[in-house]
Image (cartoon, rainbow, N blue to C red):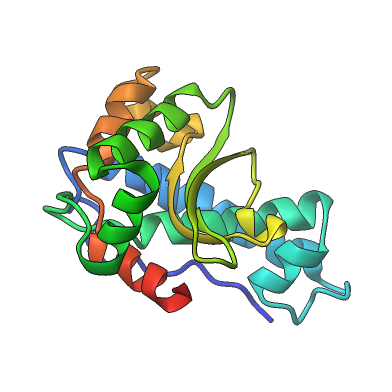
Length: 195
């Protein structure tokens, strides 16, 4: 099967001033596209040539895993943004966050700290386990929580290409901006799909 770059649910300039059009042109248009191109080339004539991303993530390693996971991770990340986003979650997700972290503010602080302190490149995730318990996990490089039987709900990309054009080396400023574009409706839907 041919993997494709998913369409963004907003225009390239729609997240400004928090994420610039230039960042999306490079991060989505070049980096994300490169993972798609690389994976399609790598899986030719392999047992993964007809596999979806989750199957590849769960069963591959090396370059095939890395590129499949990066397509999944980036698609998951980009699809949870919207112009004039932010705010806080509602309903069951808000209840679960308060139950787990004590308050939304505590969750936001812990998630942000996980992003700011992850060494090198990687991802921070809000995940749920088989008991519907929420937690925050960090993964390095192309790591994905699916490999630990955790279901991802939300993610933050802390590879430098996610923010360097906008905030240079100021990762905490990028994380602050991230909260302004979050589409909680998408994240709530993901959570309720697993709850």
